[in-house]
Length: 91
Image 1 (cartoon, one colour):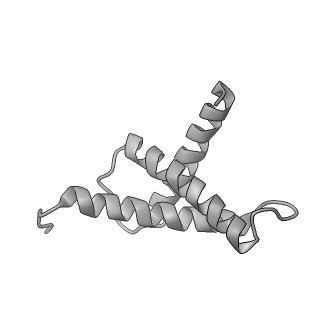
Image 2 (tube, rainbow, N blue to C red):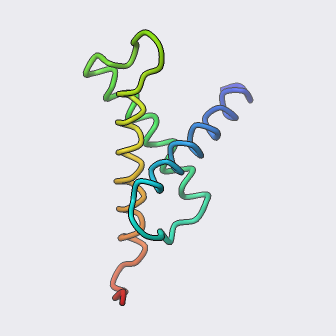
């Protein structure tokens, strides 16, 4: 992987992760690094799902693919937050 590919993966991870956090209600106790990781994973899996469904390559902007990626990022951030909370009780 070239440096430009790495930088673009980080940018996509930040954007997708941040959008995933925005759709969740309340404040999430997940750091920036984990948000980027979740965003990158969500972007990769979302692209795969969009390709399997046949909506990855459309004319113009791929809105359906983006929505899939954001939804996956929201699920990922929520799951990570729950996993990190473990047995802690929130009040």
